[in-house]
Picture (cartoon, rainbow, N blue to C red):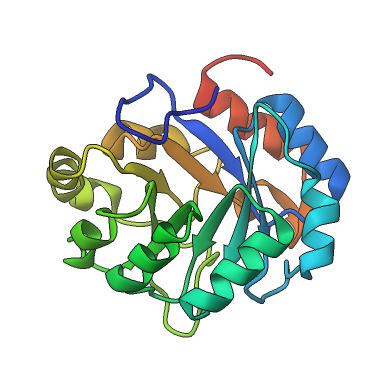
Length: 227
C-alpha cells in the first residue's frame, strides 16, 4: 500500500525500506509491499555511489518510488545529482533551509527535507519546510550524525505538536524515521499517525544487509496481516 503524498491519511502507513545496498534486498522489500525504497548517497556504512544506487534501486516502475538520500549539498548540486540518477524522490539531510527546499522544488525535484528533532517539541522550521516539500521526514537529532542513528523520537511527547503541524500543513505528508522496528512501530503509528514509516537498521542483519525475517516482521506489524 502506498500512501498519498498530498493530504489524506491512510488507515495504515506506507513503508519505506532505506539503507539498501543489495538488489536482492530491494526486490524482497518490494515484493512484501514497500511503497518506497531508499539508497544512501550521504556517507556512512550503507553508502552507495550514484552508479551503485541505480543498480540497487533499479529503473523507474509503477508501484514503488525510489528515494535517493542526500547529505549536505547545496541546492544546485542536489538538483544535478537527482537528475543524473533519475531518482523519484530526493531525501535531503544536512538541515536544509526552507529557502533551499523551495529552490529544489521549483526545479521540479520532489524533495523530502529531513528535520532532526531533539526534545519534546517540533523545531519551528517544521512549518516552513513543509510549505514547499511533498513530505517532511522526522528523525532523531544525534550530534555528529546526519541521520540513520537508530535512535527513536519521544513519540508521546511530540504527539500534540505533530497534530498541530498536521492541521496547519495538510498537503505535506509525515514520514517517521528513527529507531523503528517490528516491536515498536505499532505504538509509533498510534501516537503520530504518519503517512509513511521509514526503517533501515531495524530490519538488518548487519549494516546494509537486510534480514528477511525482520523485514517480514516489520511489514506484519505495520500492515496487520501476514506477509
